[in-house]
Length: 235
Image (cartoon, rainbow, N blue to C red):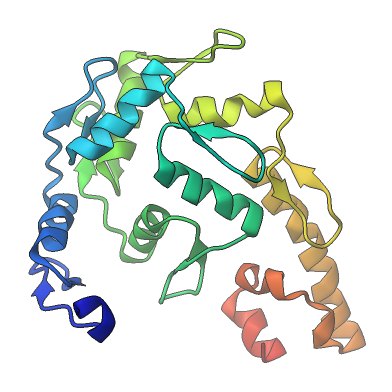
């Protein structure tokens, strides 16, 4: 019933975030404590919840039972398919209230928010470098140990994180999931896509300033324009 009323009576004493039920609050609290009781026997990566551990373990076994009906790519979890499809749709449902930047995943927003607060509670015992999340610390720590437990089954190259393999494999498959809405050019990597979109953005901003036509700035560039430009263009 609370999903309809919007009532969230369970609030986190640490940050004030509220939830509709006690289980939601229970899981959330672990993001503050850093408690990761479920450890992967294959690579040592630890998780707060058994469901996350089970999903991760499939990255080692290679089991991928869930398929994207748009491009045919398969995944170890149905939740991965949901997130993946946002690459095709461009949907970014998680928006930062501070700066307006939007994300495809809630985890991306959670990490981003810490760039505003500067919060980095997870510190490396070896070098003292601090991180906003426990998973970032775990991945970083492997740079000290040299541990690379994740291997590409196409070329044999090894990586410290399964997410690195996911991105690396696009070199072999030629997959280019990031498509420019302005000119149609596609990219394998998000940072290359972002650099490319800025070339359109810069040209459009020049048009806005010198031609005086705010309408030439496409809607999908709004998230890339800083507050200064948004205010000056009254967008």
